[in-house]
Length: 254
Image (cartoon, rainbow, N blue to C red; front, top):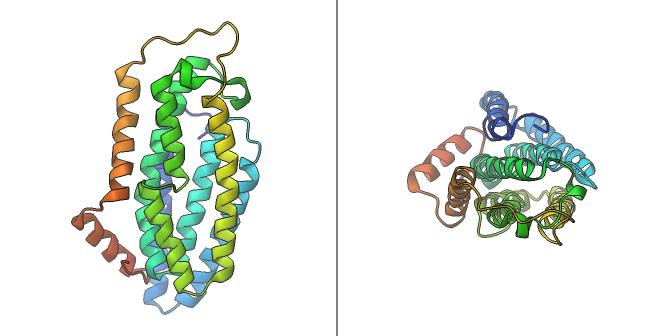
């Protein structure tokens, strides 16, 4: 994720990780059908929280913005595991999160490519003033950060809200506290890196870049529109498909 070209990173995070998670969901479906949900559920929740903790640890002070996005993918796989393990409404939230977070992460990796093309570096501390140098990409980068961190009105907000709601309904108080605490830590870590790159003055000797190419900003704009759409409206067909998929792992639609 951190070293691949940005379009490849977008595909790795937005598609390949989900394919790996599908294999886990297929196994979970078999375990539910075999009456082993009580065995599989806590196991997934435990590994999910562990993944969140690992991601939070590596995101603290992360100096490479592409690796930051890669460790954020570890975080979101942890969220999926927790939601699938809790079942109920949380399972529906996890499946919705598969789609919403994938769109947001693809958006961020494409924008990371724009930043790399303009600056020639992946080090967050070497980049300031993106709002003046790449104003459109910088605005999309902030919006993408808010989306991937579960802020309203974007799709990941609804999916994470369903996940936390399911944990509360399941009486998993410890899981709720751990989720919210780790998510807050990750939000602060990523926010400090993103805002540090976007705000501030232009480095000495660096002029404002010319108008950005439409080919570089149009795909992120379209992805951001889809993430925003999922935050305000879930099409009936998609909702029914997610509900049917969640039912196989003990989930229900909210």
